[in-house]
Length: 252
Length: 252
Image (cartoon, rainbow over all chains, first blue to last red; front, side, top):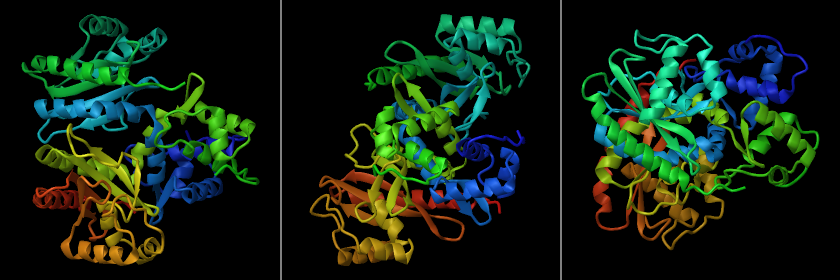
């Protein structure tokens, strides 16, 4: 990461400054930002100053954080937000009935990006976080998104090393191919102990008006005999969200 | 808005391109973006291309929208997100008990910015939206944020024209000064019919470890005799969220 890019535009540098914040870094110092984005400290300082000026970054004591203004702008029009607004009432109902983690995920690059998560006190443990990512092969949402995703993405994932979180994690192309076929046959992914031994992830697709899979909604429940019983409620949730998404009028 | 700025940095222009998306514009054409941001179409096209390249904007047919990647980056580290994560379990509990709109707001510039909203089927109507704004004088959240906000902000708001949504909206400095004093005395804002005749907004402050007010949590309920009965539950919610926020360790 920490290379100095020459001949790069100021915009590209600013993008790298903003993207140097990770999921666990709510604030960074100017020198941390410079190091992570591979910029000279003077360049980083100047661009940070400009980003603070427009509200996209904020200063907090001697540290810098992402500004509320950037969050506001990003929230206004992103496809993730429309999906989230459509999904939330259904997710809240499911969450109230099941009392376990309920989450909403989309494909972003070659990973699962979680755009919403409802947690419950005493719910089963869960690896995902809002705006967090997981590999496609490991999570139930990932298997759904991959099963209905582009063939070249499937081939790419099958050709890469697959991180094993537990003994049950899918770890090779043969297992993955078989799991994806099962998802397409059943209409859901059921992953008992794939990320933590004690939890089961279950995910179903969300479709647009053309039937294309645009997201997945998932439950994380204890890895025991009761897990299967949650599938129908989750399937109904997926269909409800799909119905709302299919009714959205897209301009243009 | 539509002025051509000369001698401006590419970064400042890119910021205006991203900010040209409004709450009701999920997609825009390149020429709409150019017009709104006051840029020549060639300049706008080039910067849009660069922003699409880094995933901050996305193309959808012949239109452009905010990219999921920008949402992800903004969600990672913004103070709004930490607040939202702390507040959500309490807001869900309140929402489940009261069954009406429950919302979370911060001060952003001279306005209220709503960063979360839980709605209910059949709930009272409500003007606010996620990532939407309202003037400080008009909403219960705004009165709370203003009552505990900087004195210079209070003076500025009192010196400006106040939009009247209904006959009950606060509309002059005398009324506003009296309302702010009442909020500080009671510890909550109670606005019966200030934005819609048929709804009442009730808001309480959320405080950090130092007692500073950092946000407001509000209920929008029908404007009838039952509204007062909701105040204790909302106050308990505000205290719960404050307790979690006060326990957050801030680096630096």
